[in-house]
Length: 290
Image (cartoon, rainbow, N blue to C red; front, side, top):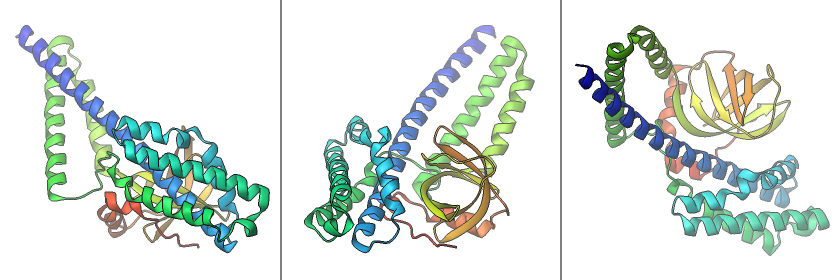
């Protein structure tokens, strides 16, 4: 009995370690995809400003993005996924934007607007945008028959492995009750929150900030954004043609936690989850100013 319990524990530990490794790799891919999508959106806003003169804030936002290490390391990350050609295209776009930004700072907007530099940068941006969905990132918000079946299989397998682990720990240490309560809390949270990759914008103090929703529920959301904001700051989250008033409750390591003032309608949440696919990340989401 003791030998069988040890074998079950070891097997379960190996399975969970493999699952954790796979989840970590997927998280890295989703992070790169998020950084790419944000960089493309901010690049487009900057190019639009050069042509129209509207929203000068786009200059400062892109300038900070180009100085950020997460942007300069994008080509290396893409190469680690075996996407060498895409890495080269992304590196070319980053270099173009740095050169264009320098030219803008030296000569002014009117000297840059409508030039070949701007047209080439816009063409390169479109090329990079076409390849964004080749970055490995499996989102639970992507609904398909195959994906739903795979997610269900993985979920069932993990749950079964968790049960085996609890039984084995009960045999060895008699602490199954505490672990069961812990797993129950995790299970309850998972039923409320949904992982996703939804491009959005935040309206804070009448200034728009691009971001990426990575986790959403009817009561709040978690977003990736590099800029720092104070706890308790009111904001408006714009996504997929919807908007929600809320307040910042935490900001740590580039992740912003937001509570909505009013629960999202179930239809709104379903629309967000069903409307997000890998292809939707390859185009900009229109922002509705309130």
